[in-house]
Every structure is written in C-alpha cells, then in structure tokens.
Length: 85
Image (tube, rainbow, N blue to C red; front, top):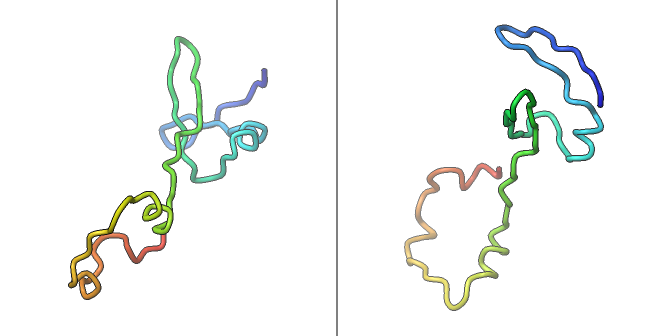
C-alpha cells in the first residue's frame, strides 16, 4: 500500500494518481475514470471506453444492400461528420 498526501486545489482536495496505476491501466491525462465509495474506501477504475469503429468496419457488419437516397451525396453535413474525432 502506498501513502500519498492530499493537496488543496480551489475548494477540493486532490492527489496525484500513481504512475504504476496509470501505466497498468493505460491511462493518460484527459482519460476518464469511475470513482465509487465503498465504506471508508474510494475505488478508482478506468471508465469503460466506447469502441471506435471505422465506416468500413460498420459497413462490413451489415448484411444485404445498404439503402441509399439519391440525394445523400448532395446533403450538407450535420453534427460531427467532418470533425475527425
């Protein structure tokens, strides 16, 4: 067990996540974690990541013909289609 020191940041107390935890769980700055309180313990787990699929992968799962509207190609993008995620 490792002991770490809490620090004050604004109205919160914070602590650094030990490198062995981040490396073992393939975490980096900006990743999300789930925190649950179990009695006097706080349990931190990597949040489940949503799988990312390419369009080719999604289309490969589709059976049969893919319905298309003739005007699809002329439709302007709406939402995040052009963002590249």
